[in-house]
Image (cartoon, rainbow, N blue to C red; front, side, top):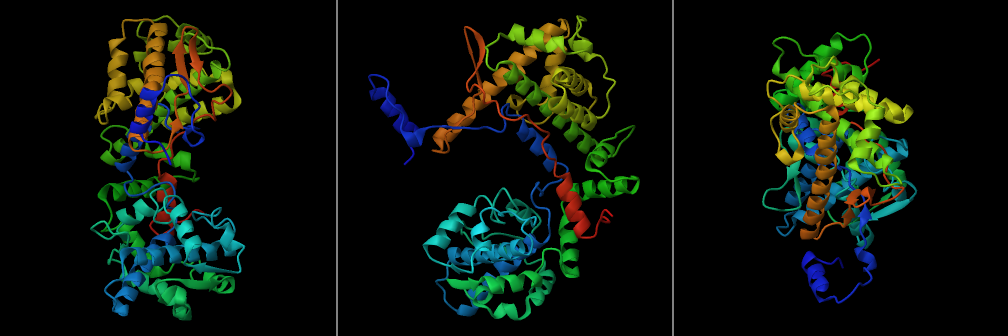
Length: 495
C-alpha cells in the first residue's frame, strides 16, 4: 500500500537517523509540464475548439458509445428487473467498445483507435469470456487509458458533443444523449442478424468467438459511416447543436482552405493566424492561441537548452547567460538598453516555432537565436486582450510583457538573467514542488519532477544523463477538427 502524507510525516518525526526507503515508495522520474505553462494553452484552445482533443478523430467511436448506452438501457427496461445497476449497464458499454475495437484491429492492425497494444490479447485469441475476474481486471486497467469513454481519449468529446454521458447522480452507467436516434438506428440496421448474438442482446457475462468478431468487423467498419450518422455528427460538431466558438473556428478553417492551393496543417494554421485591420474575433482568438503556443515553446526549449548545458557540470546563472549570448544574435547578443522591446520583424508564430524545432534537431548553436527571436516577437505582439487571462503563476503574457517593460532600463544580459532565474528555474521549482505536494495530499503517484537544483557550485541537474527529449509545440486540436469536419462532410476531403 502507498504511504499517505501523514504517514510519511509521522515516520520522519520518529526517525533518529537515515533509513532505507520502501521499494514501493520510490518515486518515478517524470513531468511533462516542467514550467507549469501548458494549462493556459489548453484554456485558449477551449476558446476556439471546445469539446475536442487530439485523440477523437473519427465519428464511429461516438456512435458506438451512444448506441451501446441506448442498447444497455433498452435491455434493462425489457428485463423488468428493478435491481439492474449502473455498473451492469457500464459493463455492457465496455463490452461493446472492446468488441468493436477488437473487430477493427482484426481488419487492420493499425486502425486509428485507442488501445492497439492492450487489445493484442484479443486479436490473438480464438474466443473471450466477457465476465469474471480477468474481464473485470481488464476493464479496470483500461478505463482511464484506452477506453473510448476515458478522459484522455473520446470521453470528454462524447459528452461535449452531446452523444452520451454519465447518468446523473454519481452512477457509473452512461446514457445516450437522445438527440441522434436516427443515426443510431442506421448504425443498428447495419448490424442485422448480429444483434441476436448475446453479446448485443443481453447483460451480464457472455462468450464471444473470434470468427464472429471478424464477421461483425465488416458490418460496422470504421470507414463506412452511414449518411444519418454523418448528418447527426455534423449537427453536433459544427451545426445547430454545436458550440458557437467551435462552429466559428471550423467555418474559418473552411474559408481559409478554399483559398489554399496546397493543404498542409502548418500552412493552414499560419493562414488562420493572419490578422490585419479589423480582423474578425475568431482569427484574433486563434492568433492569440498561437502566440501563446510560441511563448510556451520558446521557454520550454530554453529550459531544455539549460539542462543540456548543465550535463554533466554545474554552472552559475552568469555562466549560462554568457553561453547563451555567445550563439544569440540581435537584441540578446548586444548591449542596447531595453532592446527586446523594439518592434519585431517577425509576424508568424508558427514559422518561429518551426525554426526552434529545426534548430533543436539540426543545429544546436542556432537554438539561442531562434528562442530570442520568438521571445522578442511574443513580448511585443499587439493584442487587444493584452495577454490577460490565467493565473499569474502560469506566466500569462500580460505578466511577461509587464516585466519586460519594467526591465526596460537594463542591458540585455540583465534581462536574460531575470528571465532565466524567474521564468525558467523559479517557475520550474515552484511547479515541481506544487505538483508533488498535490500528489502527496491526494495519495497519488510519486513522481520526481524537479530536474535542477541550486547549490554552491551553481545550478545542478537532479538526474545526470537524463534530461529527456526536447519539447515540442502542444497540439492545438486543429488536425482533430479537420479530420472530423472532413468525415462528416462539412469540409471536402483532401485528394
